Length: 153
Image (tube, rainbow, N blue to C red; front, side, top):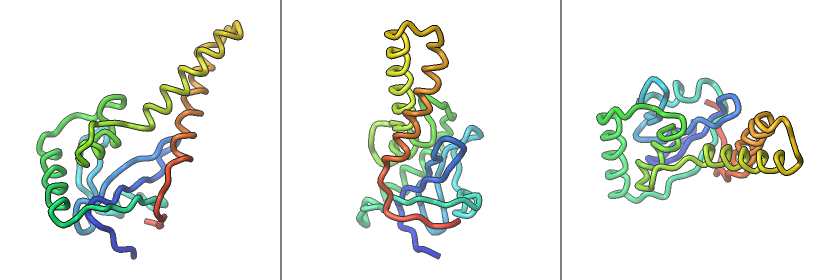
C-alpha cells in the first residue's frame, strides 16, 4: 500500500466527473458529498476504483494548519451545492484558496461555447448543443489534469 501524505489530493471516477478528496491524516480522507462533509477511510473513499493522486508539498507547520482547516470544515457543516460548494470547492478552500471547481468551470465554458456556436449556425437545438458542450468541457478538464501517480483502492 502506498504511503499518503497530509494534503495529497485524491481523484476517483464518479460517472462523468472526478470526485475529489484530500488526505487529512493516517488513512483519513476529507471529502464533500450531497449528504455532507465527512472524513472516512481511504477504502471507503475509493470504493474499489482507481485513485489518481496529486502529491502534497506541505511542510510540517502547513500540515498542522491544513488539518485544522479540514476539521473546522467538518464542524461548520456547510451544505453541499453542486455549483457553489461541491467536493472541489471544499478542497480548494481547505488548501487556503478561493473555493473553485475546475469541473464546473469547464462544463460552463463548454456549454456557453457550444450554445453560441449553435446559435451562430441558426441551430434549433441550442439546449442539446449546450448539454453536449458541457460534457465536452468536463471531459477536457479531467483529461488535461496532471496527476503524480495512480493506485487501486
